[in-house]
Image (cartoon, rainbow, N blue to C red; front, top):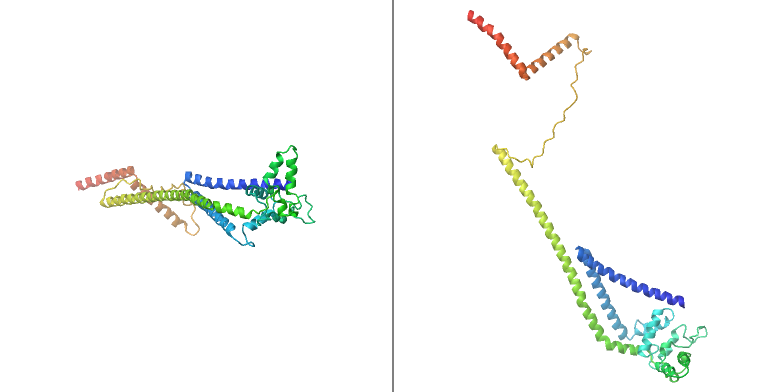
Length: 348
């Protein structure tokens, strides 16, 4: 029993921790999305908040259906209460909820108005079967006892009387008639009191659900507006960047066109920023191959010697024509040779 109660408490703590974790994740998504201008996080926050509100509305709608449905075979408040009685000793959370309901509504069991306490025979530990080994056999929970029984016993001189009276009020209650134990325990079921309480507060529940839609709608609308503004700002920045690129391309094309027109007119413009330097040719370090001293085998020696002489003569004339000193020396020699010719002509 201790192991089951400890497991139920751990399960309850895990459920609460999981719910808090989900709430923290949703709120952090909205905060980080607003601070970092992240559209995906803002849309996730808006969708999560809207989904939680939809779950709340559906839960409220199902609650109304449960209390106003008269189908005993299907899902209704009666079947849920009977299931809670059957799981009373297996789940501590259900046991605490049932005990709180029976103490506050002053009821015991589920359905019947006069003998609702007999529904505890559905529990495996309270039924009167011969195979039930538990000490709670043919009894009801302590929450079914009337408060007046314990309060009257508390005023007596015997200090053990309240404990003894609280034990006597629920033991073997399923074996007795309602008239014999109606002064000790509550005999009516909890379905009708619970339904009357729900009908009393149904309007308040609907109003709370309707009011919650206001902050939900505000948060969803603000998140969507902020996401659209961020998207619009990014689009404006991208448009301005495209305009700037087109302006630069247009200015560059205009400068190049004016430069070409000036070149056609004969004026060399200064467009060094658009001109790229031509690649310089690499200086070859390889020397021209020299002619071999020996004649090749396919030519006779005479032709080979004549070829070398003509190549040397060509080289000499090329060098004389290119170098300025040789040009001057050749011009002086020409003048010296032409002077005696003129003198001889005059003598003749």
